[in-house]
Length: 316
Image 1 (cartoon, one colour):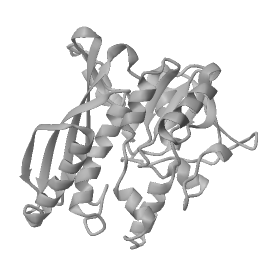
Image 2 (image 1 turned 90 degrees about the horizontal axis):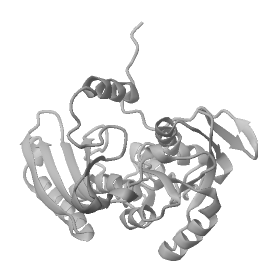
Image 3 (image 1 turned 60 degrees about the horizontal axis):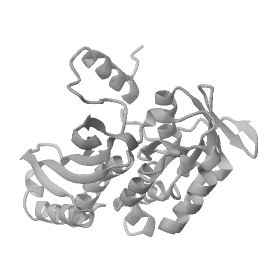
């Protein structure tokens, strides 16, 4: 019987293979960004994401300009998830012949629009020909106060688990796209993610916020990253998951690509944190559960344990 390797298996094997090599000052694999402390108490943050035609997008359903904006947005979300400020990117493109002219120009216009919006420089990259679809690789660089960086490994038993926005709109939009409904409002949400850069910076400055990451693969999968890195468990309440219009609870937990922030915070300060967040951004922080001293993720529905067997996006 052939066993399929999961994304997590592969990452663990990579980390083990390279563990004996010098880290050269970096904190590496395991968070949204690699961290390199520099002078004056600051750190540089590095992250990289791929978007591949047929896996992450359909060219017929997504304009080149939208894809340019999205390819930057999903990387800036990783920097925001660690409480950092994005400052620069590198962009590499592998393009088939039919995307190397007007399509590429429109893509770069969208990439420029997002870069201008967030004040991020494009400082390098690469281009090459593709024989099998468009491949986009972005590396984002951020800066952060080294003492305030938010990691997946810092959740503590008793913490309140929050999500910084409604979930499931992107998943519902993908459902529309796969059904051939490209022009719905939800499909537009899926094609145009909004990274929570200002929110990430604000939360990064709050000492009561312990662990943080962004929701790219879905709450049901991404919360497990925090639990594994922090060596803890969690209880999440299904009825408290904030569902966007057009999404049910399962889609909100599993749909992925919402790019909202997922965080844990000291429960003694959780109510005040949520109040201040609402005042600052006009949007609520939603408490969805709490961290436990155990090692399991437990789902509750109206106070009773349930086993929904949910999972988010599978990379392999």
